[in-house]
Image (cartoon, rainbow, N blue to C red; front, side, top):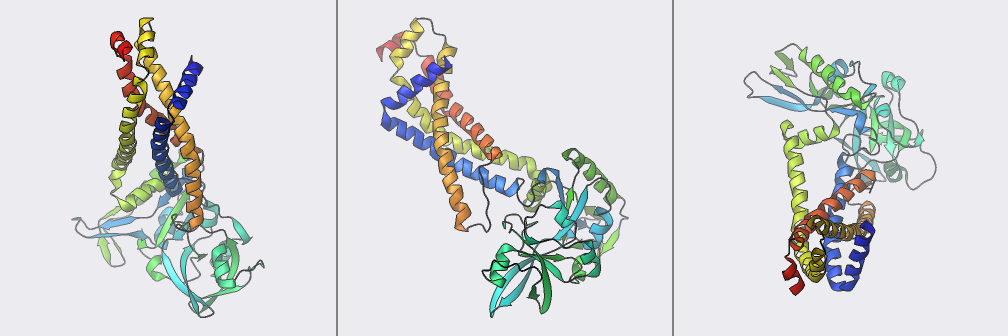
Length: 413
């Protein structure tokens, strides 16, 4: 019977090409926009290069210090000293990596200035992440202890500084702030939309002396905590909270006296939401996004309801005859819903092709440096779910209305 419904739906589509075009245009346009948005959200918060294990990663960024009256606040990243004392000593994680976020510097090639985004990291940063090394290798603990002036650069910076060359640049030197640093490795670049790992060059935290980032509680370092399994993440959070609870209060950090300290080890999405919103807003965020997507689908769905009613009205006599022969209401409703889902999935297939072309264009356009938007399994699964919801939204109302049409009225149409 299901096969017969599909055949009937196909015949109906071929009967009126103009209605079919309008219907498929509305469906495919709506689903294309939603697929591209879904792909972009996945690009922002999903597990992608070089943070391929975000399902096992926790992030520590904001350290919030307040006085006893909650009138003075100091919100910043953690200091290197804080990370070493309270984060690197955690027992539950597999490993912990440290990195700064936003640091900038300039270098010059043939009197041309190159603006650089720099990260200072520890050696474990390369264990927590999954960088692709085009040349060389990362610096290690020995480089850290010796304070070696070494760095890892991206393939893009290699082209900018050393020119278009296929020759390896490992062992060559790059001048930064009147100091020479030896290139020890070259990695594939990271999109700027991943601020925890994106930079032009990476150097050991011990390579440059930054006292403003090193002492006290506040500084410029973020921690990436890799759990052995996703199930260990809650235990890591508990252990970190216990370590923070043992900090004597009141205390002092770089001249700021505080009585309250707030910090947490959070997933990437939790950290992302906290950077832009209040910590308790995640539920509201999900609700708003869900309502936005529902409304975005509902508006064209309402227009498609009218088109579907017109399309189904042409089959009123068919409905009347089937009801006269005893076809139950639920059978008629099921048929029309299946037909509408079939049409919706045709529009979804068109939207999938359009989305692939748009995403490929975005990746090649340079709007987002090193962008790698994809239509992966997660995006595809969400797209299938969207197609189902859209098909139901635009199909249930007209199907129910027509199935309830009296036999006499249906035969008169």
